[in-house]
Image (cartoon, rainbow, N blue to C red):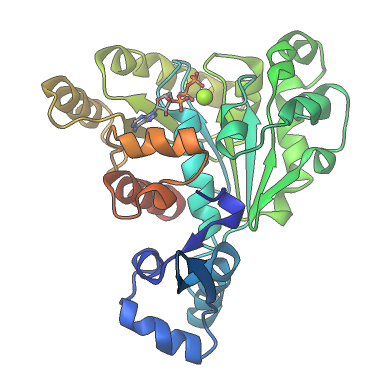
Length: 323
Ligand SMILES: Nc1ncnc2c1ncn2[C@@H]1O[C@H](COP(=O)(O)OP(=O)(O)OP(=O)(O)O)[C@@H](O)[C@H]1O
Ligand SMILES: [Mg+2]
């Protein structure tokens, strides 16, 4: 199984992602709108589309039709919840890879000392690399902390050192503004900047709330996660008041299992209590998402026709263009 940067799509997968009929692929090739390569699988040469060629196709379509494909509604976004284990890192990783596949230029930002976004993006030497700690505490230029993961996808990785950022950050002047000021220096390079955050009401997360336009709160569809939602929403409102910001907030229901009555009840409660905020897209609990995490790849690579791929397609469209 290829890592994200080497990923190739079959014509059927490409047609599915591009929302076209498979039969259109030949005419796209002959008109020069799509490039394909031949890759040996077993004894046969199979037609494949590389990540780079897929991105070029989407960029070409956007230019030709003047669509808003490359302009997400909210440029700076974060996945957030003070509760741990709700799926923030998993969904952030799939979201940024999906956005890069569509032709966007994306920066992923790992703000968690666990470094799970970094690992999910298959970067395994983050302990040797600079992180946002060096930018905010040691004044490293933010551009020097960025590494390329794949065509269209850059990352500022996270490592254990981030666990020690709270005390020195607390002592800095304008502490909550330092991250937005750093992001402002590179914002023009990207169509989309997405942070994965640590599961706490930390100053680092507060700084990302100050920098963000859209906050995607990942809520597991279980009773305790739902119980914590009022606190999360109150924390966000407090930040908005303190820093005079207006944030768009979306609640993403995750780990949904429609065979469980409790899952259905929590989803119903979320939609009743937060009708404006709950996303239409629901992420089911699937083996494919766990498998993608284990193999450090995309759900489209694991099973392009599966439920997880469908759910992540719907969520990506919604958070990029409708929220
Ligand atoms: N929809 C899903 N279906 C199946 N497994 C999932 C799903 N979402 C997340 N998981 C799994 O749940 C576990 C926790 O997910 P993840 O690490 O993304 O949560 P988190 O909110 O980032 O945790 P933390 O708060 O510790 O940072 C992982 O093993 C992940 O693979
Ligand atoms: Mg995480």
